[in-house]
Image: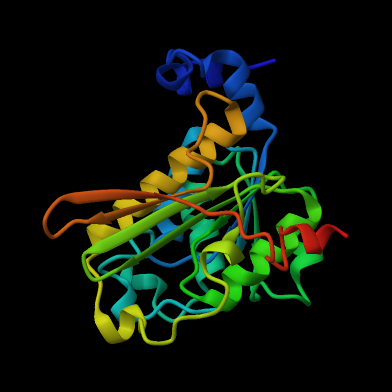
Length: 251
């Protein structure tokens, strides 16, 4: 049952057709794992918390640095040198004290996956690492969990949603091995609003998954070039020989 206070707080989103009371109730009972608390993770965490997600598990082993502040908008100057997950947990608590926040100072990898994925409904990738995404893809496929990917560099961004059963392919179908030629944001640069735009799409995709208010674009890579305001979509091709979701991985 939704309390009178919650009805008032979430009244605007409850009024959205397809979201309504059932969506809010589902959101209140949901658990989201957010891998990475940087430029993508900060706005995603704040908006999911503001929407009333029941539990947020934050995973990152980094500390807040001065160069983070232009795009990692949750962190004030007073958080410099602090653990990102601890600082972000504090910021979430100040905005919505009803959200349970589990702050875990670690990396998502093969050794931590089972512990981090316990009782989770959706995983949001806010990392900038092929290794991390590869691990998320493998372990969520094994457990039958959907996950939401985002990436950004310079003035371009990309989003993708992988369904629980990988009917539309998986991350390994898209990127079977790392492309080391691309470089990182530290090397190539990034504008804060670009990661914000990608993160908002990730957040919307996550809300769709959790509430059923709409259907995410499963298996579609959405690429945006914000320099020229151009967008493109590419449907993922399911690879039969994929080690994660291909036919050979199920035999």
